[in-house]
Length: 226
View 1: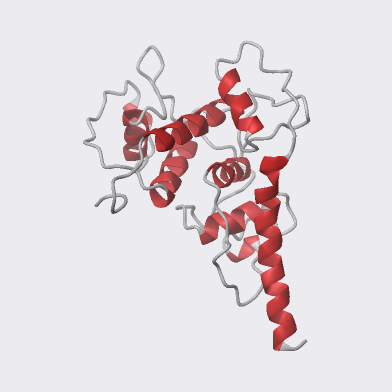
View 2: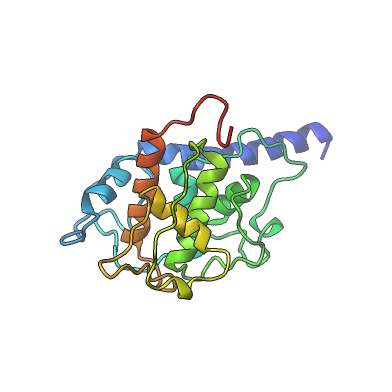
């Protein structure tokens, strides 16, 4: 194969990955039928109409099901509209180039490639099939937002969290920032439940709140931190 043909194939592969995600926002969405009594129902439906989230079928969202790492990454990629438009590859990228535990033929492979090339703080030993906890999803969401959204600087006033001792080391800062921005919240007992597996409804609500904050708080001229 000559060099010209090889470059065409690599660029084509990148284009396919980008179009896969960009095209989702144009799909018509039927209403989910399993959101009765789900507090985040309206938020989930708005995200669905925008093509950011999808159900397991046209009518089922399974709001109380856990979120795997692969699903969480896909959700973050969709929400922040991450892509690889400007990335030049020497060879067609594969998910295992970045995450050895991934599968190059799995449905999530494209999302992992995009996430890795946008440097959203994922660890190389990530297990796509592992269920993410509330602290893991919140932490990864905040890292991605702060990397790719020019948020204004705020004076962080840490809040008392009743189960703060249960946090994994290094995650507490992300949780505090999510609470300060109104992206996450505590329960009536002042607990975050960091080690509890996050549900699809909870993850969708965090995504919605994050996008609302970003839209309502444009960064000052000069970008984040300036």
